[in-house]
Image (cartoon, rainbow, N blue to C red; front, side, top):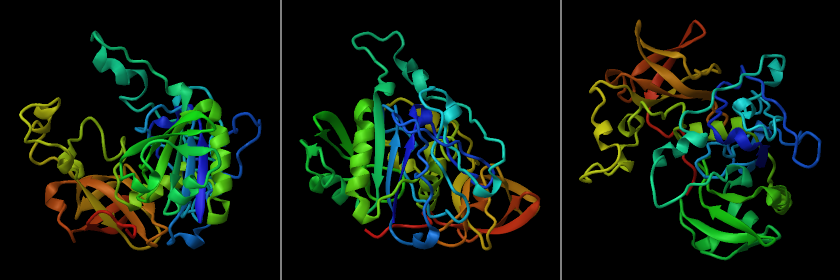
Length: 364
């Protein structure tokens, strides 16, 4: 099974669909067609346990730092996501939200822009000399092609020519160059789904053509469109933190289980002082698993007995595992594996057990 989605330029902010049962997503108009991309719907949950192929367009993103990556519509039994409507506005109004088919009349949430994104990202070079930073965000689009068949699909996409490191030699988190119908193409073996895949950055004028070519090339391999809520479910199952949820300017890497990515033994680097400024009892990120069908969502309280010890950052009913999973920041004393906690789900205490991350690991 495979999926893809098209999103507009301002969807490069986090815009996570953490609560698919509450938010309604706005459909999207495919550029140049004047029609809704209504085929980019969440797919069947029947193949939830199988590897999922995914392709996604994030129009107007200029970097791979965008969190708007492709995902799996494995949770289609709970929520049907559709792509986005607001195009070319450059405002956070077009951030994708999970669409609940059962609650289509619910008010659509418009999230605030994520701090540190957009023009403010360049504030650190203010007053510097010797170089110039140009924001070319609106000139590029990003397509995320995800899943174990991604390499074969990309290799067989008409018009794609890799001019740098060959795809079969490209390592994880490495990049190469190429062209699509003579337009420059940046290819990175990255993504935020927990699956293998590639992100393709191309000038916006050629994005729709590349999108169509990739979908056609993957048709016989099960490639279909998918939306952001599906991607969010996949990255949660893979235990991957998302900015605005498990990551922020107020969270040091060690709290989120990312201490290994910082070379603290270096004599000096930007931010080193901040790594040691947090309190010793700062909350830490844990995985939580529950039984039943009710999942804890971002912002729900986590309790140990009658004491509130933390808060859910991301949660969903896992289609792959068949039970609720969540990530939460909790007090260190409540973070030991096997600790029995409860989640306050709209006034009902739902038992949850601290477990190791990730919840799901793909076959190598």
